[in-house]
Amino acid sequence: MAASIIDGRAVAKEVRAEVAGEVEAFRKAHGYPPGLAVIIAGDDPASRVYVSSKKKMCENLGIHSEEYAMPASTGQEELIATIRNLNNDKRIHGVLVQLPLPNHLDEGEVLETIDPRKDVDGFHPVSVGNFVVGKEAFVPCTPLGIMRLIKKTGMEIKGKRAVVVGRSNIVGKPVAMLLLAQHATVTICHSRTVDLPGVCREADILVAAIGRPEMLDGSYIKPGAVVIDVGVNEVGRTEEGKRILVGDVKFDEAKEIASHITPVPGGVGPMTIAMLMRSTMDAAWRAVGKGGCGCSCKS
Ligand code: GUN
Image 1: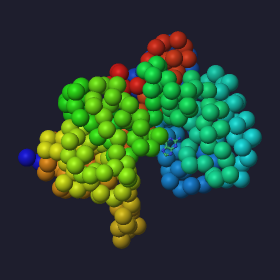
Image 2: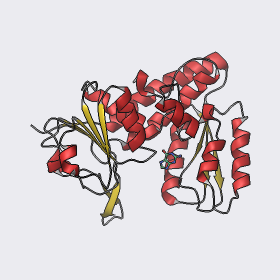
Image 3: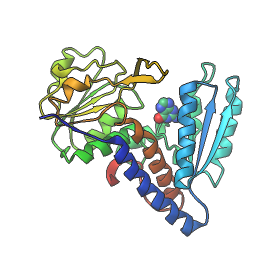
Image 4: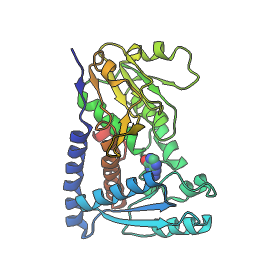
């Protein structure tokens, strides 16, 4: 039987509805809305698209948003000073610097300047450390979205074998830690893993985040597995100039073997910005002393 398709657009809509309700409650209680500041340096076209989507989503949910579009020539000091101002701005609960930064800027120093209490991306080393040791911390948004999608399948994570292909700081490592926190037995694979298909075939939960178009074919999939495809790979353009996107998984083969699978597009993609809204809301609750954490415990 073909796998159920996990509808990321529908789940993202649920998250947005949940956050919109909380934004309203927060505004009523405090007289001002949660606020998110997004800084972008340079004119990378993909980054511009992401930043305008984040801004639009804030507007839709009633979150105050500020965009700081800085030229590619921006100096390190100017960028750092902008972040420090936002760290001290009471109306701003989340501060995010869109990556990648122009090459001359020091990404590590920039990320470490963000106040960890406002680090809604979860990229600050303090956030990473707190998260790994199980303390309250912001967690990167794509992994949070992946956990929501897995939960949505109804599969119990506890005791399952999870295999994550890819070891990036934004997706692979944090999603592995989230799965571990939910008591999965987790393996992280990468380009030098020996017998990658064999390791993947052991996975009850398979997360593909390697950025290689359709690399994981049917031979990588265990029958009944939940397959989460994080890949967004452009493999061409239609005659009208629209991007043709495929994931890291060969969808048509995998869907005949898996129990649940995310499509590309329409799977993990829509979850990332929805979870950013979730984390911004959590940052605002925390700023007024009301619990809430960026992890998946509430999902
Ligand atoms: N660039 C690609 N993904 C992300 C993300 O999740 N956050 C930021 N800040 N930059 C990115």
